Length: 561
Ligand code: SF4
Image 1 (cartoon, helix red, strand yellow):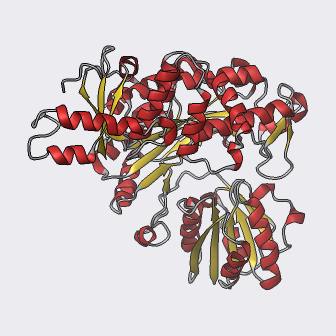
Image 2 (cartoon, protein in one colour; image 1 turned 90 degrees about the horizontal axis):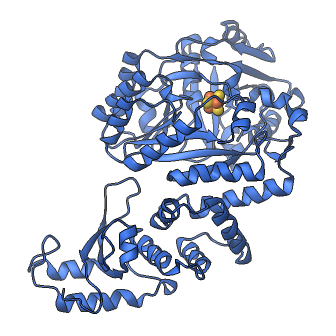
Image 3 (cartoon, helix red, strand yellow; image 1 turned 180 degrees about the vertical axis):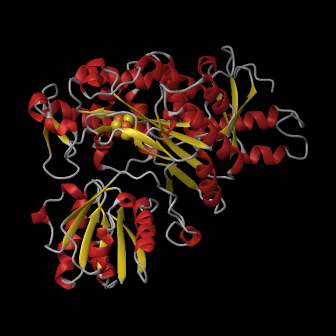
């Protein structure tokens, strides 16, 4: 028999873990099968994709259905059935059950639950071509890593690898599909180590743990982290973690790791107590914020924090407070996702109670709630787009750190910036670093701290690796300082250069004089002005900014350097 396993990922670099599990189960349960895995992206052109799939001429096509690909899969199946009417179409994955029977051809089968826990009658029916319209897989104790050595050079080459060391979640958030089956199942840690060792032998660039709350058991999480630190070479590991479940041992460990080793995704969703209680989210917000702040200060882990827009009891003002609570602790990335009302979740049964309006089709984004009119929600959506463009990158780190350290109202800042962005048609233009730097420069023009803020924009621009300054940042400052330093600095000035490397140092470095206030803000002097030297090499830190050093503390007038 010939089976084609089809996945539609969001991006080329993603991979579809469930297809690999499915392949292993099919091989275990059916003899003499020819199975091929095929991964596309949801942005691939439709007709050529359909042609590639129809060319597979399989007896059965298996699709892995998620919220982001349900529409394209529905479309593909309904066209494929015209070309291959005698094949079976089998759909699994969290969104398969949401597809209605009248969306699908008659020879379709929906498998819900876990493929490892499905009854053997499924395979018997598959072999004789008499599948029922639905099957239910039970929760399975075993979920061994499904990869083979060939996968790493074939289907997984240049893609993220996904791995689960546990299944299920200890929490039951009412909007989440994981809440339907509460409880967590752990894989034996020795087994985890053995499987990871096999994966790491292929030196993947990135490995993402799909465990819903990786640190639900702090001892176990630490044990796996220690193993990854000791055994990996150049791989970055991504974890979804709960920030209120950190032990002191974990902080001690994280403080000492290499900066590119770990990335954390932290779901806070809201800091509004009434909202958290309405969605059944039990976490201590104060502990979470304190712990995120500690992690930010350590500066060894990339931190991505999620907020959800449109949750029950979240008003325009309370969302602003949630945003400010997160902004003030300074994570690297703040994501504001819209609430999605997923079929079958507890929240989907509370629509009338919360007056939630949402889109009819996947991914079912919220349109309005009892606490947010559609206009308010739309304003917050564009606010989120503004944060995404300006904050969620490495371009303006010192600029935003200044706002965070000095207690600025981040919510109001981005609302005002949004207004300027609209005037300048920002959302219809290419969102380049240059354009954003110009807009910020314009935005701060009348601020009492405008000189300091402009210097921080210059600092950020050069730290991002540029070897020039654009017109709005005053390109002349570079040449003026360099000429003066070349003339006045001694032939040997350690640790920067000796008399052999002097020319090279001047050729490859950029020099800018900064005010005492700016250098104090950057933690480089106690308020004396001076010259910073931007080197043409990256520092080995999370954001890989260019190296910078204080060359001398002196004012322009008495520079003896
Ligand atoms: S949102 Fe996260 S923490 Fe809450 S139930 Fe889902 S997976 Fe668990």
